[in-house]
Length: 353
Ligand code: NAD
Image (cartoon, rainbow, N blue to C red; front, top):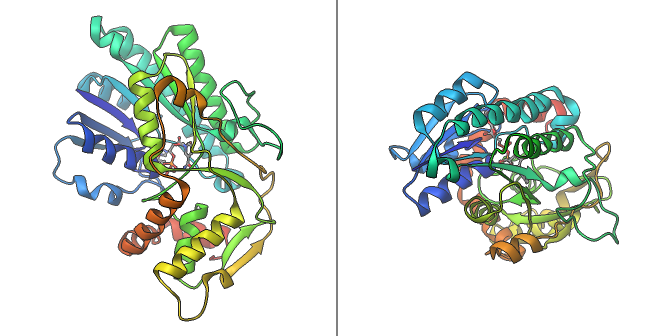
């Protein structure tokens, strides 16, 4: 058996591929364009493992996707590939529209053509699993209940708008063509292999380098955090047992203000890697807020818990400790991703921070 994964060299996709192959002998075809966010270094432990086939290519390339489906006959396509960074979507939305909307469209059309010629058990078994975000629901007020699957879509950034569009395409391909799809909308992930432009790895990496820890606005923006491996187990649960055409929110009931996340990271670093110059919190620097910055996201995960029996394995305390320790243990990986395109982009957009 085989699954086709898109974006499997990125943060969540690579964690998913590693987890998948640790738990089963199924082959994984990994289609990834290796943009600045794709890093084969995440998959070094799979070198020489014939169960992992990496294909450097674009999800918008319909011919390539058709060929991969025809050659490998996967039982599922798990779609992670995306432009995923909100700040980048504000500076340059075009790439987000192309990959997140056109790319999802190309995958849906290729999957529809492939699935429609399958027969019997293979046809019944096929799944298109679309991986999406809670940001499609917009922003919550402090007293609002967390996002349920029934919440209206109110995306506020070019990133979340492009993901919302892709979610709608996936829904429409099920309702119009009967394509067997499932969609998951997950809260903010953190954990190993997270690219250091995102809040938690940026704080760890900057703190270790003695650089300022930039916190947007008043730092009171609230996000709901989930350890990446728990997201991967949620995807597996939905892929294997989810109801076709349904969406499932995945979250860990861990609402935290950004400033509290930064303080937690500093406290863990003080404990695990004390700095003779003083507590890492001395580096916290408030910077101008991001335009249109959503104030609060929170996920109501009761549907996946109730219907599929999924539960996260980590609490925030255990997950964040593992994450900080991982970055301390993997300085070579950090040095690698900090070179090249990432460095140029950070230099241009964050003034070198
Ligand atoms: P990421 O940016 O780390 O990885 C994206 C991957 O997609 C990279 O490997 C990149 O090379 C690849 N890619 C980009 N454009 C491509 C193209 N045109 N063709 C083929 N590959 C391409 O992203 P991530 O954080 O791992 O997120 C993965 C998915 O999960 C995304 O769809 C994102 O919307 C969703 N998601 C992320 C989070 C989060 O907290 N990071 C939360 C919920 C949902």
